[in-house]
Length: 181
Image 1: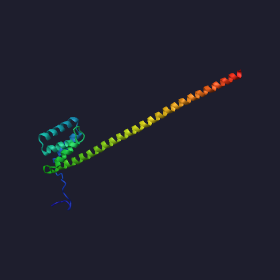
Image 2: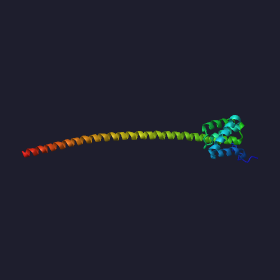
Image 3: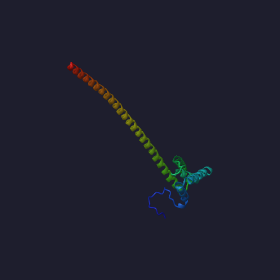
Image 4: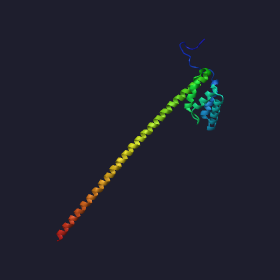
């Protein structure tokens, strides 16, 4: 007898035996938390297995390794392509493999969208910073030009003042000379 409530669809695979997913999960854990040498070894082993024995299990293992972040060989784009190809052959997958592939595909797709958005935001931020720098440089150039003009006007005013002072001195000297005569 079925214990599910009536009207509930069961198109979603259920993971019945976690022992089947254990090796995948353990390897993903070692890959995510291991040192670079361990990560490189796991990657190289999975890559070689996928190339030499291209069965669905080795392809899934390699795709999951490519999809796992936190190591030098992670490649979300390649993982996405491989996971889609794997999921296109559901008859070759166990329910656990199908679940893992689906979960990792959704994760990779989300990360790719987020990475694209982060790149867009960085580019926009760089563009805005560049625009602000250009505006600041324009303002600085305008202020420098105004300062030059003000210095020049000040120098001209000082010359005129000096000339007026010289004229007044000359007039006083002449008046003084006229009074002495």
